[in-house]
Image (cartoon, rainbow, N blue to C red; front, side, top):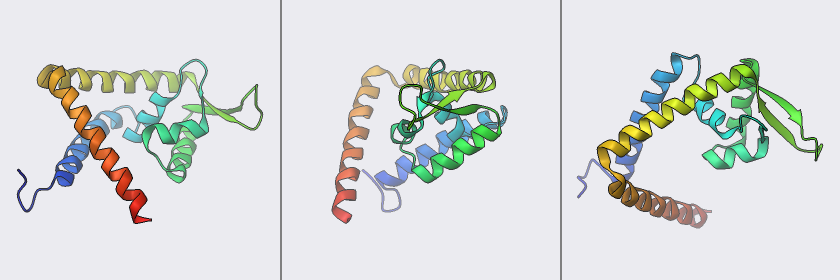
Length: 147
């Protein structure tokens, strides 16, 4: 199954690095990063999103997210606005430039996912999703045991 040098973890990490390199190569062409692209996809193009809901949806730590949101604001991709219903909440809203970059990110992710589905097929992808969910569950369980 796995050699002494290649573990399940190393396979997952190698795959993620290959995917990240692919997305970064595409992102660079549009003055983006993979991280910014994924954050853009979490922001509703009409209403924006509460800043606190972005990180958990993509597994990003608050410190990293703050740094990324600051970069996005500097690039003119987003603005921060107080929620009209709850002034304590900060909403992240896309600018016109941000909306355009979000569409670029959306197209890149959609195209890659279509290529995966075409090459691998829905049945194998279903199994993959089940397996990766189990792996995540094991990792979450171990994380809580380590504390």
